[in-house]
Length: 462
Image 1 (tube, rainbow, N blue to C red):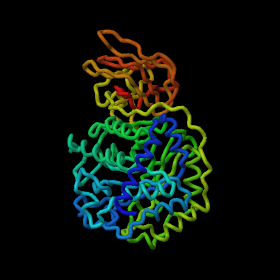
Image 2: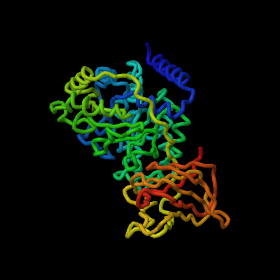
Image 3: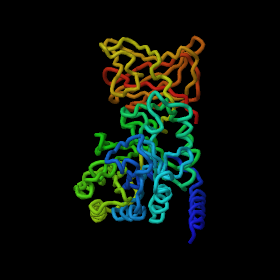
Image 4: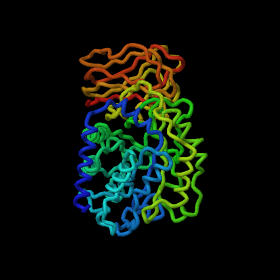
């Protein structure tokens, strides 16, 4: 078969897959399908592979990227040996090198000695081995200077262009894992690169692609904020509750000592197969959490023998038991800009230093706390001008407030939005769009001292 015939076959396969995948599924169904996949392979393979570092020099030359024996079929068969159901490849990491044939920048694999599209080889090999395909993409990009306090409209267009290529040219993508966004170490906020615009683009290109932000740990485990799936990077100390989690979740760890390949890996012990099965895969699956295990290819583009042996051992110890228990009914994720963030806030008498500003500081570890001498406390956001909104999310440190009223101030009058009972820790209230200069919560009943960790107001577009 000629190269042109192979390319045509690949395109036809993509078209066929899109046709089969065309009907948009409800998000709840996609979340369930993701959880049911249970266990998959993360593949950190990019220019850091050639630098003995997880974070590469942003000025590293494309000339160093040259996996002369790249074998994505070996990766896929190794995943199958561990009874994994999917693979996820780092298309672009934090240093900005793209391992696909992108038209958005010359800083890509086609300008390396290798000159072949790695993403294409990955998706073809994993599909051939009947494995699902997911992609990883970093918003933070130190080569192209996509950093905090430096994002321009052109940067956002580059992000959109790169995601459009990834979600148009490679057939159906089960999930997109985004990194380097709204994390304490990246500091690129959901306002710098508007989350709702990116989310909407992804869903327009591939309605059945689940989008995950890998840095969602700052948000409470009981709510879904800026992601379709709750994410936990276990290597960074993030832990999903193995006793109480009910949200569709993803947890990740590397099988080796770090994410990208190091020269020491071939002779270093990997993580123990039995421990991974008994301490991670099984208990996490039991609480709606899909576990993704990273395996780092070496500089030739293949897995080392010790990693292959551990994956095979995992497959001997663990078998996929099939679909998980049905997920509970969940609120749709919050994806819009928080209109209340850092706006002027007011409240009834606070407890000591825990004043009203702690409830809209974009920090879920701090709270406004009502003074014990206030019988019916209240909390208010003052927009200073007419502002349209249709959703409010109230998050508490612990479930406490049960009865409350939500109101907005319009034409000199307070008008009710909600008056009722909601005892959840994360209370999401959606309603027909209203417009007002202020919004407030009047707390009628709480189990103990009323407090609010974050009061979010949103104008959701869809």
